[in-house]
Amino acid sequence: MRPIPEYVSITEASKLLGVNEEFTYQLVNRGYLHHKIDSRNAKVIFPDHIRQFKQDYVILSKLSEESEISSAKIVEILELLEIFPVDHNNSYKLRQKLYTRADILKTSLLYRYVQYLPE
Image (cartoon, rainbow, N blue to C red):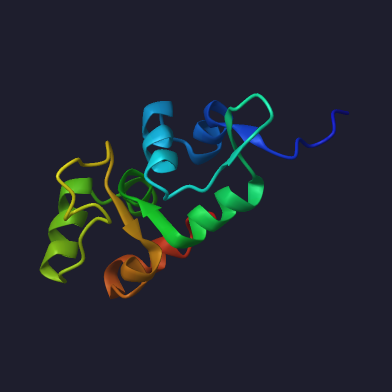
């Protein structure tokens, strides 16, 4: 049995989050997903960083999968409630829509789905 690694690469973190590598790099480079620099000067992610990310944020595609509500419908619902993605004021958008978990938990309709998303 291999020991559990202390940290994972961005590629491995992408798999754990169920998103593509490019999006994971965006999350890291913009500070949404914390990381450290290892001895080879590579960005590495600790399990606590992934756990913290899942506690702080909700990826729209994951919320859509869990709720079986289309992403477009969820965005519409959230906009009516004045809940916007974390980057809505940035000119350079993330590849996928990312919301703070706390904002989504304020919605009665989506609350029950967020609580089932893995932390």
